[in-house]
Image (cartoon, rainbow, N blue to C red; front, side, top):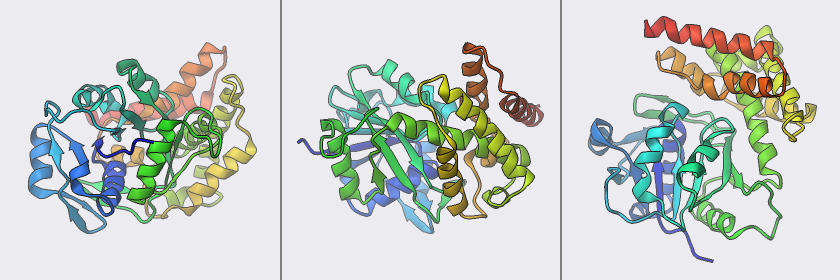
Length: 310
């Protein structure tokens, strides 16, 4: 099995910076490429990126750098930046490149695969991370787990691409797992995000407000129940155990931590509502279904965005 020698990552937000920091502690910096351009690239070179009080100076490469393709390409941007990130990663992706998308939602892999059909795009998601970013400073008490793989995976008989990534993550000491049903795992995270991220954004509240029986937690659960109903029409069939699993993950996060969507609202940035409530509503319509909780949450978040954009 060919080893992954070089990893290119785009998106030094809370998630990307946390995992690249862990990797740099365990593999040589020469194997790492952080892709950035313009003022952002200059800032990273001059000031570095701080994760849990330690400053990291990752090797920064502009999108047009002639480096040759990386063995592993990781997308860790927000959904609103995915289109430009796909273009910026062009020089890092070749026929043997394995690609992981750590974005929220259930649509980014398809968009990346459409752009790079010659590469192997695995399904992936991050479970249990509580990283928060302010400026170029990231704080995290839980690194969580990168769950990845083909749509279906058999223990002991992983595909070559899955095996290569597993070996890399183990050498970089990045917590990871390979679920037997990766598509279902992706939907479980989607269900949790739809409920927790949107509710926290509307209420501008930390995880702690959703970690006990409250009106806020019930609102999140109502949005999650609509994803469960949708999943039955998408041959995923989430159930109450999947919801309990997601809520148990939520309850382990730092009560002071905040979802990425809540952080976006507080910083007056565009949110990822398009890949949460609006995706649920759009997919529901394709099946002749209405999901009023997600309709309302999505409208409220769009109204919040309009207020600070104006």
